[in-house]
Length: 165
Image 1 (cartoon, rainbow, N blue to C red):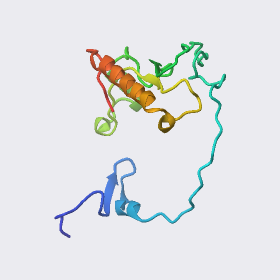
Image 2 (cartoon, rainbow, N blue to C red):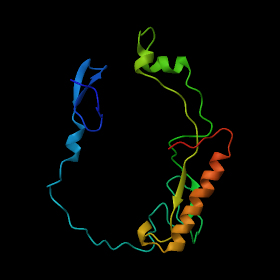
Image 3 (cartoon, rainbow, N blue to C red):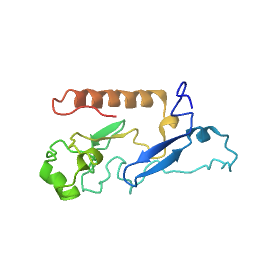
Image 4 (cartoon, rainbow, N blue to C red):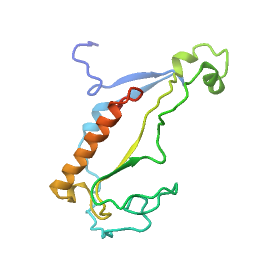
């Protein structure tokens, strides 16, 4: 068997799973086969311009009790239920021991943990509940791109925060 021209995305291979101590077959080329399954027709959904129960609509109260501004264009706010927080404590060896136990040889190679911090922002594209991005006018889409640029500039200028994708 030659290793010349081998591609992890085109050729079958096995990968070792250290948890089960078994080999797993990977056949990535099978994802390239044609789809012959059922094709659904698009549904035409009638959505309201404003939904009084939507946590993102202008003027509505969010689940935390915070109230949205009566925004008329793109609206950005800090996520009430963010995946990361700016003031995250460090993950100490003691914290890790609570999860994996102590005196477990080889654990560091298998279970690696690092603290992370940051901010999560919500970008409401439009005050219109019934519009999706491709349905917005070009100037509305330009406003969204400007909001993304502003959020990027704000977060990347912080010395304690970095941008991760």
